[in-house]
Image 1 (cartoon, rainbow, N blue to C red):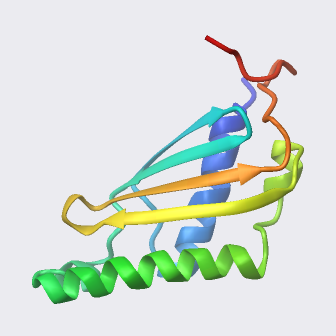
Image 2 (cartoon, rainbow, N blue to C red; image 1 turned 180 degrees about the vertical axis):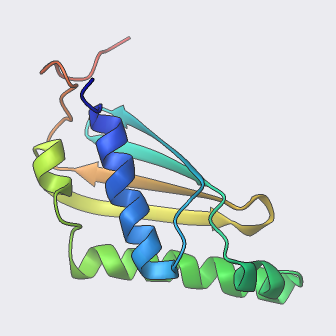
Length: 125
């Protein structure tokens, strides 16, 4: 059974996180909405980040570092295969991280609407 577009997108995001932080998320889910891919990532923190984030100052340092590193990584170079998979150019990435819940959210905004695996545009409701 072929992988879905969401699963393939998740693998690209997971690979980038692994390259940046040495550990990818344990769970990841992506929703395509119009020209956006909304990705929710759980189980991201390394043992060192968990140790550092035991204090409020450490937690803010981990959140800030993760957010800035991801935004810088995507600003320098769009991950290989991402735009080809989506069929559109990546315009913007918004990203944040909630250290206490070990959860991150990234919103990728593409130039054109994201087509489903069946070639249809986003559904309206």
